[in-house]
Length: 207
Image (cartoon, rainbow, N blue to C red; front, side, top):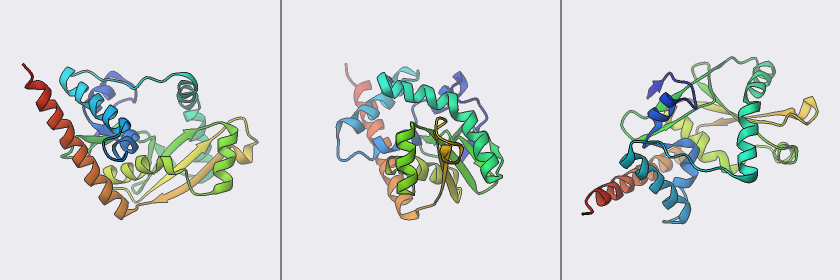
């Protein structure tokens, strides 16, 4: 594990993750077969390798608003998490795998064994998450990916919705390492990166 002490969103952060499969997109890597989701992400990584420049996914409509809200509310959510749990969150820039072109950008480390992932959401989704318990399956690849890449033992999933009453505003669920899942994830990421290399070589060979 190599930790880049950079500010997330900065030029240095973009440079550190250039051409790497990142945990926030591991769900795309795991997309079945050679579907459009996996292929689109694969080509995005290849484009970064070929151009030496970051290619950000475009966010429009409701998705863009969700991203904007998430950035705005993250500091409030982290503060609420520290108050509720008594944990101190250490900000992290980018974590790079020792050998694979893969990495993650954790929302923070907690002590020597844990980490935290903050998701800012709308009230209806927050209530659904609280009532169902656990954590949404769409975040499993990202969180288990962070556990794999950092070697940590647990990760707190935090869902935050500022408009709800204080007792419902922050939801915290501790996610433990799933070694079976992590082993399968590592294998899929490895295959994905080989596919990236193959496509890059093919495109460079076009006359």
